[in-house]
Length: 516
Image 1 (cartoon, helix red, strand yellow):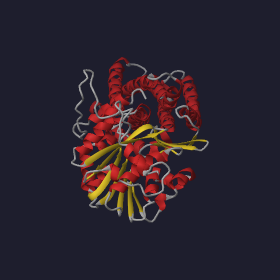
Image 2 (cartoon, helix red, strand yellow; image 1 turned 135 degrees about the vertical axis):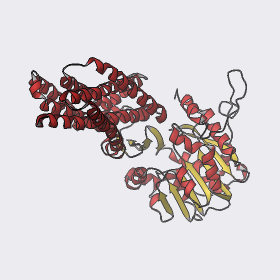
Image 3 (cartoon, one colour; image 1 turned 120 degrees about the vertical axis):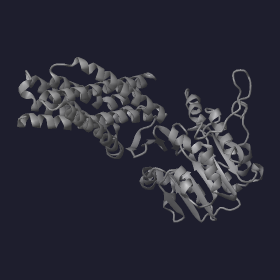
Image 4 (cartoon, helix red, strand yellow; image 1 turned 30 degrees about the horizontal axis):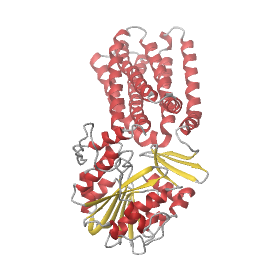
């Protein structure tokens, strides 16, 4: 084999690894897009991975028809992957903002199948070309396959630890598209002497390069205008952390915090939510020395807790350090939380709440559970009997716990299933709800090792909404929001506790919020 052939064959091995890296990045990127825009991360990752692999199978089958002009076939496949994959995130946000409901899901699944099919064509063509150059069949195939599989691992790691947190989903797609295009152009150059009218192909590649570079430098800003359509108020801060997309909006005096598109708070009425979240449990507890807050990285629940002079220590456990950093640095959030997370009485731990409870040997007088709604498998874990058993095991005798539990109006079955789950751990429970204009009617599950008598509780700290007199009324539920949920035959449903083995809550949540 001459030097030229050796150089070409070596690059084919490298190319197989590089395009595999790009393929796996597009695959997980589509899953991330589906999870962020469509919700239910497990469902979206399952669908996109399944569709991508199906597409690869279709592509591998179609590759049998590519018998001639292997180099040009590979180059144009890479051109298409670069163009379609590169613009995928950008177009997804545009379609979500401007098209009818359901169009975004159809687009995502279609583009996943198409890019998967194109990716499936790549590898067989590279193997044939390696063999055509003159390398022994078993050796060339093994090397290309090794490069392909190893590239898959590298691509996954790059997406999780570098591309998504540093570049975001729009820039990542354009950047990976540029890499696919670069591979195509290098192959075109290495094999230029065996290709007719090679200049035309370089012109096509150059046009795609210009489009991708424009997208790389300006696509993020344009996508922001698309995403702005998804929110009522102007976006003043947006970042993608390792765990989620964090957005702040502002309209006049109203500051709103969104995590992965879900509203977490509005500065106009957050006090109604946080006062009910914190003060009944503090009134119930025999002591208030040590308080645990699970979630609540915005610091506002901690602000309410710091009103109690008896509190010696507050441990806040929030998975995402980016939320805590924003709460400590953004002047809008600092004004809301009054710098609560910087208090000497507060310890912040960035860890998964479930893991923290499994590893910690501390006991607490009060536990405040202020976690996002259970709309995927990872969050569902924090609404299971197993999780609430852990919280019970860290609650001191005479202690109390309050859990945010979504809306008994909009997600009635979800709310009462959460209540049933907490009750199944042996804790005494009471149910309360409050109207929060930005959220609607919102529910909480009040729990303690001891029986709870709401009428005996007293709110003795400064508040804007909650009073001793109002508190008892919050435990009354109307007929369309109480626990007597009836099926189509008029029979009262028997709700089951949510567990790790039987995660009934996810489907209930998705079904409940379908029309809201």
